[in-house]
Image 1 (cartoon, rainbow, N blue to C red):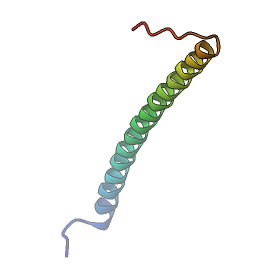
Image 2: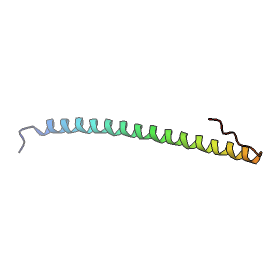
Image 3: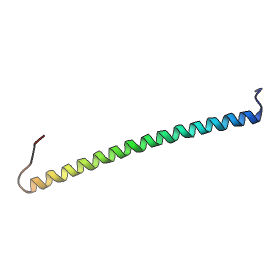
Length: 65
């Protein structure tokens, strides 16, 4: 049995819960950042594919790096 009073245990648990919520929120923010970067990269690739298809349709392709 713990010598810590139930009131103090509740406060400690509430602080632990609040800290966990902050950690979870930060992790979700990082995940959203990664998803945004992935989406941006996919959009860039799609744009490049469209450009290449247009060039091929015109009978040439620009291969400059």
